[in-house]
Image 1 (cartoon, helix red, strand yellow):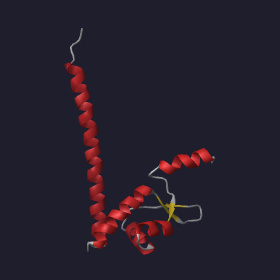
Image 2: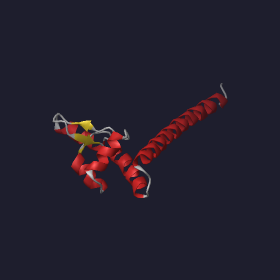
Image 3: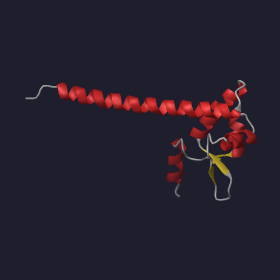
Image 4: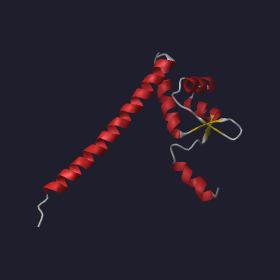
Length: 115
């Protein structure tokens, strides 16, 4: 891997750049919390060659949302389910927006006069 390859990953939300300790520190939580949301299948960290968990920025955002719900009194299993559903809803909205834009483009192209 070259330095250019490494720098390119700095902007990659899915690159597993954070160790469990660093992820817990950034989130202000415990490593046990990260293990618990992993067991609940909210996030599945990648493993380093040595078997250590590695988290991406995307996974940290998901974990932060789960922590917010747990801090408000939601049981961890329910919090994980809520976050999964929120994530699915956001993805469905993104896909719908893409379809809507494509449909509008097709409609405007069809309504143009041909010469």
